[in-house]
Length: 272
Image 1: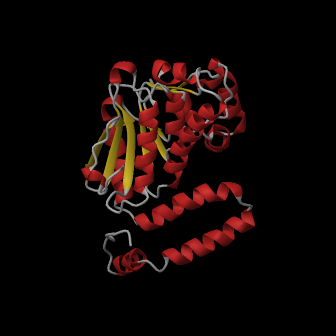
Image 2 (image 1 turned 60 degrees about the vertical axis):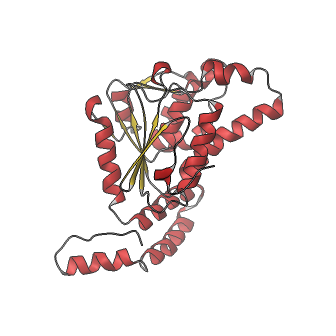
Image 3 (image 1 turned 135 degrees about the horizontal axis):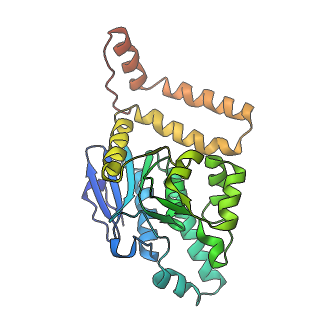
C-alpha cells in the first residue's frame, strides 16, 4: 500500500527521493544492472498510480544506479519462474507489466528518464513510457524481446515506439532486437538530448524542477491530450483541445500569467 504524501513512503524495491516538487525514482540493484522483479514491477505500478493523487509532487525523474538504467526482467527471478506458469499465470504477469506503463502514462506528472549504460528489454520500455528522455553517448538501448523468442509487441511498444522514432525505425528495432547506441538514439529522437554521465541525473532533475515550477495543472492536461490524441482524428483532436484549453483558461495560473505580463514580471505558477 502506497502512503501519501509520497515523501513519507519507503519503497522496498527501488530508491525514492522527494525534494521540493520533484520525486526521483532510482532502480537500485546496481550489481545486476538494475533488473526488474515481480515485486519491483508491482511497486512501480502502485507508485505511479499513487502519483495521480499526489498533489505535492509535480514532476518525476526515473533513473538507475551504478552507471546503468535497467537490464530488463531478472533472468532468474522473472524469466525462469515464468517457464512454469500456465496461460492464466502468464497473462496475469503480462497484464501487470502493461499496467505499469498504463500507470506511467496516466499520472499527470511529466516523467523525465535519465538513461545511462544498459537500457534493455523492460528497461527500454520504462524509458519509452517516460515523457522526456535524457541519455548518455554510451547508453545501449535495445528491445530484446525477439531475441528470447517473444514478439516485439510488449507493454505498448508497437503503439508507443513508432510515435517516438517512426514506424520504419521502430520496426527495425522490434524485429531485430539490436542495440541502439546513445548517439543514434538521440539522432532518431528517442533521446531528447545527450548529457555527460556525471551530469545526467542533475540535468534530468533540473528539467523536472523547471516543469514542476510551470503551470502544472496545464502540464497534466497536455500529457493527457498527448496520450488521448493518438487515437483521434484531427478534427476530433482540435475539438477536444478546445475544451481542454477553455478549462485551463479558468485556472488561477492563467490569470497569474496575464497579470505578470501586464506588470512586466515573471509569473509564479501554483498549479491551480
